[in-house]
Length: 285
Image (tube, rainbow, N blue to C red; front, side):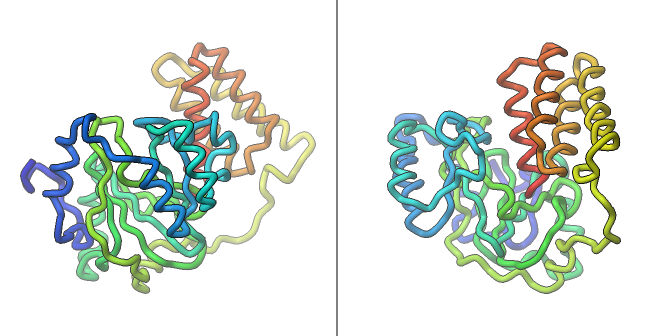
């Protein structure tokens, strides 16, 4: 793969190893697959909260991490035990409080949008970065505060309320995530913090705390969206409703209703669980 074939990222993408590392990862065969256990344990020893994900996927491995991102741990023995039970588990990392990962997805035009957004400031400040298996980019920064979930088109922000897939995990495409450089995590410059920060809005009561008739009507409305979804749009409807539920703290009763509504439309149980987990991660990132 040559540079013109890849949508270009801002300046922070240009490590010393760059495309060569990514190309090597794409051609790696299963016979030379990395030792994921060693990488997971190394992350825990470095103080990272590590999470086992489904092999070759992005969702938490339910049998080992039933509470999703909340089960992430830096306990070395716990992490070792997880990967001894499932050596092929992908590695998730929950960013520490005060750390934000800029997650660029070129399939949604993220790299182009980020270039335009950061161009007036000379591009992204160099920092620790990783290539994703889907030709995306994770750029890690230190920044305190409450941030948006999305910076711009195709660029999400992942903080302590979520997690990211870490190298050398295997992407569904068959390529591996790889570190793009070995730089330390940089402080986000003030202009980037300002772009990431949530707008301050007037306080208003949330549906989740109204209780009574108002809360029940809100629940029924979300369940109805899922129940009335047509084939081809059922998963999207469930994801939307689950995101709204997650914004209210994912009340167990409501999540159960959404799960049953999804089953009623014919969605497979495994797909429903993946969608619910994904919505929870998006809403809290």
